[in-house]
Each structure stands twice: as structure tokens, then as C-alpha cells.
Length: 487
Image 1 (cartoon, rainbow, N blue to C red):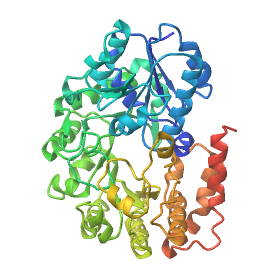
Image 2 (cartoon, rainbow, N blue to C red):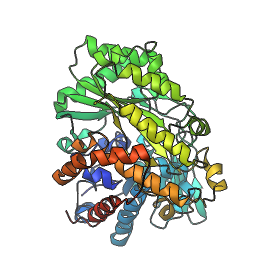
Image 3 (cartoon, rainbow, N blue to C red):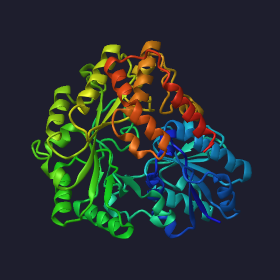
Image 4 (cartoon, rainbow, N blue to C red):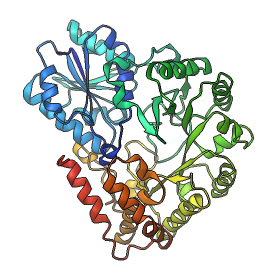
């Protein structure tokens, strides 16, 4: 039995198709102080098909709360399903945290299955909350939470942002680490957070609303290297994926960490995410340090090939910079991973065509390059584009259930014509097969289909054609199969 139960809900059908799952880092971070004084059980729905039985075993009369993390979209639906189950079989308080509940705590609490919301970062807040529940102390004394009272919803004062350098390592003992050592190019990889927040102003991103926007904070180079050494030695891994929103915001810090990786011969590879202008600022456009440090994937947010759309979303990047970056990185052995989004308000077919053309240009001549799934824009709460969404005819969701409809394949935005919807839906599907992403999927049938389908995928992107687009049936069928857990 556990005093605190942490639940990581399924987030997408794509995730369930992967060979290995990423560490539920958000929950582990939130538990860094709690687990030192309380018995804690973490249930990962991605790995536990009979989560209901596992949850029932852990739910005893001394259980203080069941805690969920939730992102906008499919993860909300799964968290609601489990929250309903908790309420059906017990009277234990249900606590939600994560980006979505933190931005919309009142709306989240209007759902009858949610009792308390952790607003913002969870490390200190969750500890104080659990201690208050244990001691039956008044909840108004806990900063950083929102909760239900007899008189309505109460939001307590905000909690200051944490100094990352003061936090201990995540409590890896709460999980079977072997389940989260992912395979990348056949080698063992683990995840590490070295910074939080992003100071940029992308109009579709909710970072600023989450309270982390301009308040970028990071581990010192010494602490970051110490963490890298620790997980390498403890878990016998070959590489580390740094899951920061943008590793390169402080270029001097980034250079210091990368140099230490080389000088101290850590003998690991790195997967990193950043913005083109920050990466090009690292060494005046010289990417040799990234190559020396063993960067094996550099994820870059391109979003669109249309300069008009890039300006609309305040990306502060020019298409010419993107092509300059391609020329530079193609001269190295660093595999770039370019991320795209479509379906923005006012986006036209010509804008979409420019994105499709840029996808193919970025892949051309570089067998190591990959592109992301071509995501349809997800209208996240509290972003600068909210007014554009409303002007485009969107009725902003008023409940958790409404927000839960924004899955990876949701595309029915009112500002999109049926023709544009078909083309975005097509790009969403065929982008899975333009490169070697299929190697990260466990299904042999999917791998075979990917190899055979790639020439068709390329032709569809090149022509932006949806003529006789029967392929989408495979995706819908796969989604249905995964939803009902047939295998």
C-alpha cells in the first residue's frame, strides 16, 4: 500500500507504438522531497495494462492522495478515466498537476473528479500538500495549490520558482529504470533535464502562461556534468537525451557543458533540442563542438516554410536562416531533426505548400536528416494566438473533456477549409514515412509498410496531392486497435 500514488497517463497512440517509453520525469521530479518521508508508488499507464488492479492494490485507507500529470489533449482523457475510477472505489483526494492544470486551475477543478491542482512546479508544493493532508493541516497554508471548498474554488498564493541546482536527483528508485532506457541507433539512452523555461515569444506556445516563459533557469555546467556522470555510471547507458525546451539559450553555458563532455571523455552521445538562431550563435556558426561532443540528434523547431506564418507566430526566424543552417549541418555528421506544424489561423494552401517544399529541401542530400510528424496545430490554453483562434471561429474549450479532444490527429479547426484539412491530414500521415523514423517502432508490419510506402509518401508531399488517399484508413485502424488494446 502507498501513502502517495503517482499516475502517468497514456499520452498518444504514437507513444504506445514505441519500443521503449521515456521516463515519467515530470512525476519523478515532483516526488523528489515527498518520497523521502512517505511511501510512494508510481503507476505508468503506458506500461501497466491492468492499471486498475494495480491501483486497487495500492489504494488503502492510509493513502493520502492520487496524483496525475496532464498535458493538453489525449493525456487528459486518460487521466480523467483513471480519476473516475479512483472516485468510484475510494474517497482519496485526486490531485492534478502539469502544464494544462497549472494554466487553467479553476476550469480543471470544475470537473467533479479533480479535488486539488498543483499550480506550477511541483517539488516543494507536493511535499507541503502531502504533509498537510497527513497532518490534517489547513490547505490555505500551502502555497502553489488550488482546491475546492464549500464556498467555491480557492487559489493560494504562488510559490517561487525553484533553483534547479538545489534539487536532488530524481528518485529513480520509484521505477524500474530498465523500462525507460530507450534505444537510439541500437544504443542505450536515458533522459536528463538541465534547464526549464524558454524566454522566446512563440505565439502558439504556452510556456509563458505556465509561469516559466522568461524565467529560464538551468543547472550549472558542473552540476549538469555531475548528473551525466551519475546516470551513466548507475544505469550503464551510452547516450543522454537532454529534454530541455532549448539547451542553447545561454551559449556560454552550452559550450562549457559540451567542452566538458569532450575533455572529460564521458564517452556518451547527446540528443539536444534548440532554436536555429541560438545554435548558430554557439560558435559563430561553427558546429564542430557539437560534433566533437557526440551530438547524434539535434532537434530544431522549424514550424513552417512560409515566412508569413513564421512572422505570424513570432518565431523570429527567417527561411534563409533555416537553409543556411541546413548547409552548415549537412557538412557534419550531426543528424538534424526538423519539427513542423500546420493548420495555423489564416494559413493558406500556398503557405502549406511552402512547408511541404521546405521539408523535402531539408531532407535532400542528407540521409541522416529527419522530419517530425507534421503536426496539426493544437490550440493550447493561454497563448498569444488565442485571439486568432476565436477570430477564426473557435469556441475555446470550457471543460477538461473539451480540451481532451485535441489529440495528435485532431484537425477540425473552423478556420480550415475542407481542402486544407485533407492536405494537413495527408502530411500528418505521410511524414511518418519520409525518412527512417520507422526504425524506432517495434512492429515489424509497420517497418515493412514504411519501406514500401516511402516513395509514395515522397510523391504526395512533393505534389501536395490527396488524390485517392486510402492510406489514412491504416492510421485510423491502428488508432482503434491501440485504443481497445487488442494487442
